[in-house]
Amino acid sequence: MFTGIIQAIGKIADLQPKGGDMALTVNTGKLPMADVELGDSIAVNGVCLTAIALSESGFSADVSRETLSLTSLGALSKGSEVNLEKALTLQTRLGGHLVSGHVDGLGEVKSRHHDARSERFVIAAPSDISRYIATKGSITVDGVSLTVNKVNGAEFEINIVPHTIEETIISHYQAGTKVNLEVDVVARYLERLIQGGALQQSSSGITEAFLAENGF
Image 1 (spheres, rainbow, N blue to C red):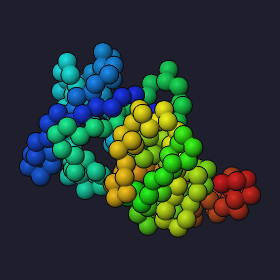
Image 2: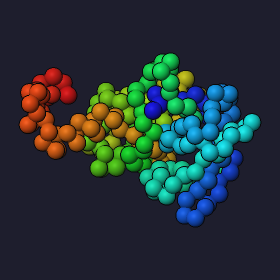
Image 3: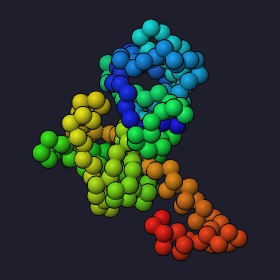
Image 4: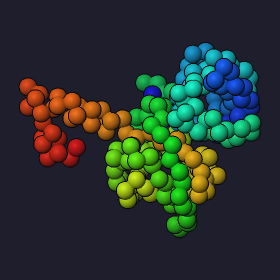
């Protein structure tokens, strides 16, 4: 699990196709790596990867065919900058929201414009995950925990403050940029429970109507 608070911007040092998937090597820059061990999880642009090799400059990870098909990692090239976050611990401050590192789909930046010192972006989400995106709800964009300002169909708007622009790859976004999206995990599980009919038949008395009345 992660928080969606980016700890460093890294760079892709190498990409090697291997039997239909890919081996990825990342230069982690200023990310503290002293406490990272083989097998630990590190989120790269919001994608949870397992460190299979460590070096003084970074780590390597295997990227499966499934991950390549659902994320933007396959479009990276040597030198590409990426958002990095180590997995959270019980001592980590949860400054963002709970993020699993399991990308739900690729979004596309539609527009970008200045708003005082901030930047506003409109992003189009895949239609099959747009129902999970709510105004003032949480969403993860390339590993960054963000608040949704507005929703219009499958498009949503986010406001990025100067610090986030400076400390993440969002500074590079332009119309047409593809971004990894992860919706709020609570929304996904709640929908699954409702679809299964478990809530309506629950002996505890918790029903779909009860949840709606209490803001869910």
